[in-house]
Image 1: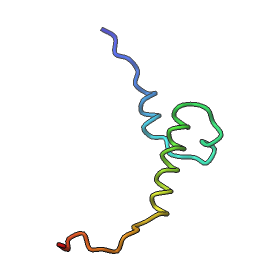
Image 2: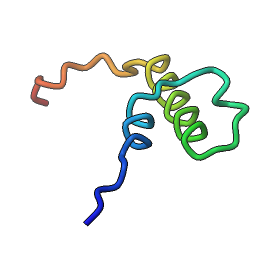
Image 3: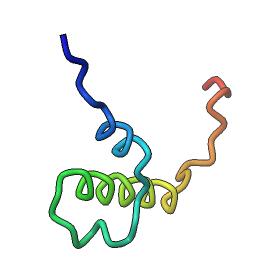
Image 4: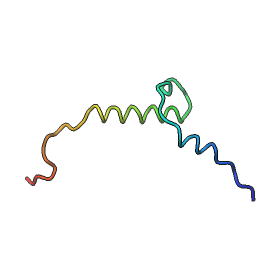
Length: 57
């Protein structure tokens, strides 16, 4: 039984977002760009409410 080379998966796992990912058409770049946009939007939105979540009504 021949073991497959898994270098491709480690390259994908080590890949980080790059601003050029918005212009690329491959699945990995598209996924990174989408995830980056979602995280950025969530970070910029922040916490809307100021109520203490531990406070009982």
